[in-house]
Length: 500
Image (cartoon, rainbow, N blue to C red; front, side, top):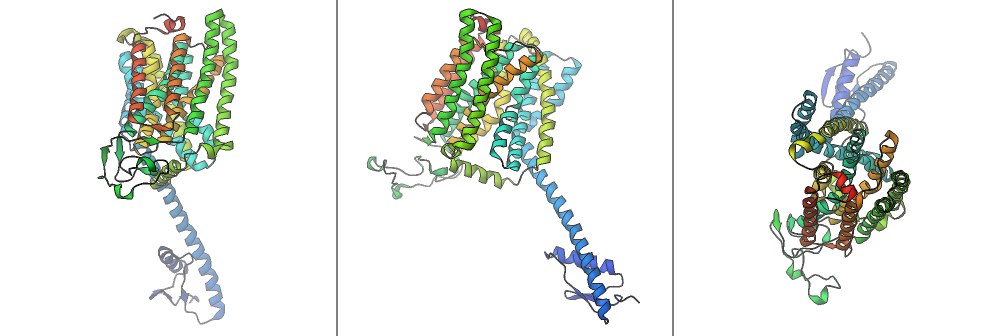
């Protein structure tokens, strides 16, 4: 008989060791399930030489068994992590609109009515924009590099706008590109920020204390002498029922430095739009305006990277909403680890392909929709198409606002407007140059005036570092007035000539 053809005691039980590998694997797996790194056991052997040989075989088999089970555990953890991340991305009300994606593409290929093709692809782009944004955030979390994260957000954070821009330029619809980019800036500045201020200033989530210690009536009340010292009257602290409820006299507080830097960058971008427009109105030299626009696009684009460096490297502490960022990180941690790098990149690539396909189908029928439906090109470009690209930012900004995180809401709304004006608009000009389309920065006197006035309105609202529901209402009503005006503007050519 072999030296190990005796009995082996493992723990409190006794099993046969007639077949060495089977016994050892059973023993190792049992101990691994119990949480031990190296299985323990002993075999009863009469000869010392046989004991040494058995010990070596046992150690080798134990290591192989442990590596096998560890590999299975790691693969299972990898799969479960990515499944949880994908579930968090796709488990959303917007995901129901993904059903419109195959219908919209099929309708385009089969030559259905242009109105059906337009609206099916319009709704299909809304969840695709959300998935692109979520996948970008997951990739940012995996990389742990703020500079790279800023560049990724600049690229994929506005991927829908950039894809629509490229497809529209290829179709020769330069005016639609201008209107879409202008509408995206106006939508983020007025509608997204306005709804965030409105709902954040009148709705409270949870009970008792507001998040981050913001001063609201449901937290504490102050006497006039105590407002400067910020000493609460503890006797007046009140607990409200948990849930969603309206709050009177609520006011949210945010760090004003970050908001003012972003709005000032918007004002600088307005200068880049205004100068070519004024030059075109004064001299009317299209070739000179085109050359000026391409040079200005390079300067404005560099300004965005300077803005990133200021925000992420040199003055990150001055502009940080530290308490809100910590709470947001905690929320992310509660949702799980998220996607791995490979899965996040794959999801980005796949979603980009579907977004490009759907936007191509949408752009192909814009002119037919204008002719058949009576909706003007201006309204489609400035009001409707930005809804697609801004849907994700819109929901996120309002959600953070009602959670008493106004700083994050402003970063999302105004930050997205900065990205479009300083990054996507120069990208459109340079892309038009590359494919031979005369894309310039002459947006017309009407559009440029509207943009400058809106930036000044936003600056006047955020300059005090406080927000309430009335300020949100003013921003939303401003956007509604602009939408009514563009409903009556029939063509982009009229805008360029400043004739309605």
